[in-house]
Image (cartoon, rainbow, N blue to C red):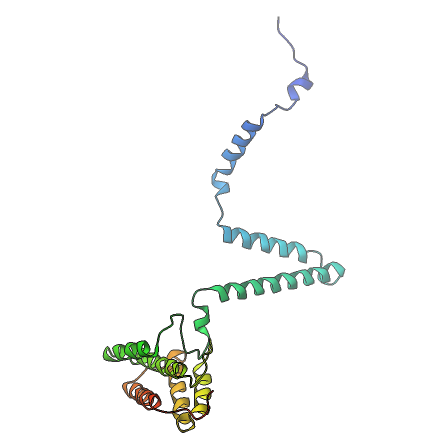
Length: 212
């Protein structure tokens, strides 16, 4: 005897268990149409879609004005986060134009020895940088100028020039030379280094009239 099943029963959906559904979803997502998207591309896509949804409200009505305000706020937050991240990058402080010292702290004698080593190898730009740092550290060690984190070469020349007026012009010239080779892309020269080394020797025996 043949059993006839009701049509409604035959058309009813099959009850799929939770584990089976998870396996089916995983198999579907692993297919070629669902390749894992890089995180950056995904964020960019979702952000673009979000902006598109905001702008779809129109640019002239009340919805459009609200959308523009939201977009401006988002861009402002992104800009703040970007600046914050750049400031936290290693070596970020060294990009400040004119700054004398790097991250590593050395004595005047150590800067001077490094300058001589670089000069012996023909690295005149590096030698000029280290000699100016030797001058700056020497003046700080002798209390001619007060230590100041982040001080630029120009600021050093101004402070030291007030304490040592006869050498003010040479200090300004040395600061310009330092900035040129460090931040201006200029090539150092033997003559420039020898001029700075001679200034270093004169300043070592100079006495400050007024402390800076």
